[in-house]
Image (cartoon, rainbow, N blue to C red):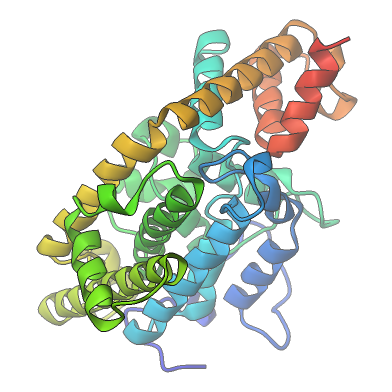
Length: 374
């Protein structure tokens, strides 16, 4: 095991699990969490949940599964450089999207709208909360408890953000949002590794789909800078290799900047323990210049990719599927299998949300077809 910094999470000093268990043999607590995540049902389903493009749009586009693996790779590299716990940061990265709906953010937004409209007391729908719900309650693999019974530190990292209203009912893992304290540095880094992965790989998928072009991207500072550097070094590079070199160069720049900036913050604030990390301002960050460039890239992708007419048509269809499924099940719960039927209306709405959130893209399309086509 690589050396751990004093501010890193130590599995031997974990805040523990919700249900007592025997100590793991041959692995540490965070390794056990990582392994449980990889073997769980919700993780396998990520293979058929969309990132930007609906699953049947093509075999080469990212899915939630490939995205989660890419996040874990980036996060683990940074963890090693900062002497953080690599198994914990990998567990957080692999689990962070377990609660995502089919059809990406369009599915999440529509499911949240349905919950707020038809069950206003149920608390809406948010995929970070749902990811926690998956690992705490919904997975059914173990005889002695619901969920995966993960360590507090893993659960804390999965819950990236949360309103005070929701935090109050989440107990230990929600307390930091009320007390305005920071999560572990592993959780902070995993959050930014997620951003690095999806921004850069959405460029790749956007170019592959033809929805955005290299010429458009040259308007974005961070892309133009890396494009020019690659072209200077490889002036005759064909397009596919050119895009690959630019993206890997951009990822490398962001990883190094995040590592160096965070290391400088650590040297300045000198946290000597995990408690010091929790009490400090945010420690993991990009430099101001790179933060501006990353934000410019995000705005470009929002304007030119996520709101492209072809993507908007897909998301419009996706939202309709989610809404019509929700309304059908709310109006007639007997359409659901017994495990999702409840007597109390708020609990019924939450069970419907659990069922829809657990669907893959293609299963949601199939279920919608079965309900609404003769």
